[in-house]
Amino acid sequence: MSWETVVGIVAGLLLAYAVLLVLLWVYARRHPEAVTMKDALRLLPDLLRLIRGLAADRTVDVAIRVRLVLLLAYLLLPIDLVPDFIPVIGYADDAVIVALVLRSVLKRAGPGALARHWHGSPAGLDVILRAAAPIRRRP
Image (tube, rainbow, N blue to C red):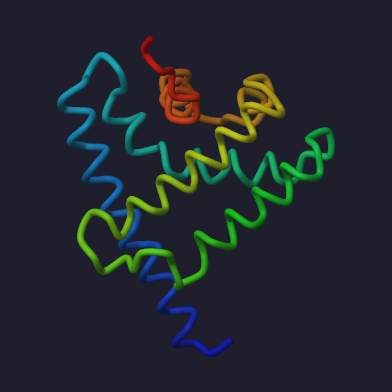
């Protein structure tokens, strides 16, 4: 792998992190009861630690661990379904894919597995669990 590729990957991750921080900052300002600014700033690093911890956990089903490794690879690769240079929706596909994978992890492994590997605050875990929860349809 050339140094240009490594620099591109690192720059893309930093840009994605900056955009996510801005979005989390806006959300935290509008919903101070849901998550504090400190929790919002820690959410992405805590989420990456959660994914890495679950992927390495031998008690978690192999199919789930494979999904998590594929998710990490997708997030690290510079190629996306929707290019990241497109404002807003460029990063929305990453968020949707993370939520879908975490939904499948939550469904198959349960919230206890997520809680076991969560290193952030309880409010941050609550945000992750709500994002990964199945959508309830109204009758």
